Image 1 (tube, rainbow, N blue to C red):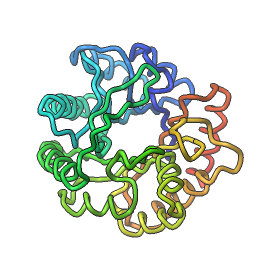
Image 2: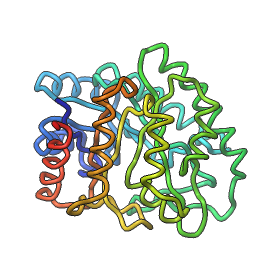
Image 3: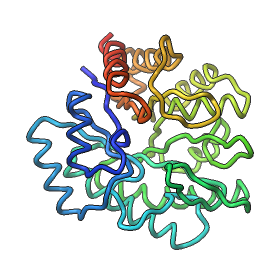
Length: 297
C-alpha cells in the first residue's frame, strides 16, 4: 500500500537527522528530503541514510538536496556559468545519493526567466532583466539532456516539476500545458515528471486556465511519465504551503491520479508528498491520514 511522504522542508534549517526523525514521526517513516538544511559532507549523509533505512525509513530526493556549502538559487535555465556549474554539482551529488537513500527519483524545477536570489523567508527575488523564453528554454533543455544521461546509466529517473508565474510577470518555465510540451518534446523519453498541485493552483489562477482541464490533459498526455505529486494549499497567488482545507480540490485530484495509476498500465508507482510547511503538526497528521485513506482506496 502507498503511503504519503512528508517533505523535510517542514523542518526548515534543522539538521538532517533531526528533520528526518521529525518527518518520520508524522509520516510513518516516509520522507522526501528537500531544503533548507545545514550542509553536511557526503559520507555523513550516506552513513545517516544507512542507519535510517535499517529502521524502515523510505526516502525520495528533491531539488535543493543535498544541502550545498553556499546557498544559491537552483536554476537550470540560468545563463551564467557559475550557477549552471553549481546546479550540475548538486544534481550529480544527488544522483550519487539516490543509491544510499534507496530513492528511484530526483526532482528539479524546470528553471526561471531571470536571475534570482533567495531571501530570508525562502522566497525568491528576481532581477528586473528578463531572459527570453526561447533562450531560457534552450538552456534548460541543454542542461536536462546532459544530466539525464547520467541518470539513465544508474537506472534512476530525473523528474521535472511544474512551476508558476508571479503576479507581476511570467517568471518561470513549465507553468502550463504548452510550456510543458515545449520542454518535454526536446528531452529524452526517460525524463519524468513531478506534478505540484499547489503550483498548478497558482498558474491556473494567474494564467487564466482551468486546473481540472489541465489535469485531464496532463494525465492523458504524460501520465506514464508521472512519478511524484506535491501537495499543499494556497490562495492562488502565493506559494503558501498551507495545510489542505476541508474538501480541498487537491483531494479529488489525488483520487483521480491514484485511480488511474491503479486501473491502467500507464502510470508507474507514484510518490505523493505533502509539502505543507506552514501548518501545525495536528493539521499535518490530519492531512496525511486523509491522503493515505485515498491511496488505500
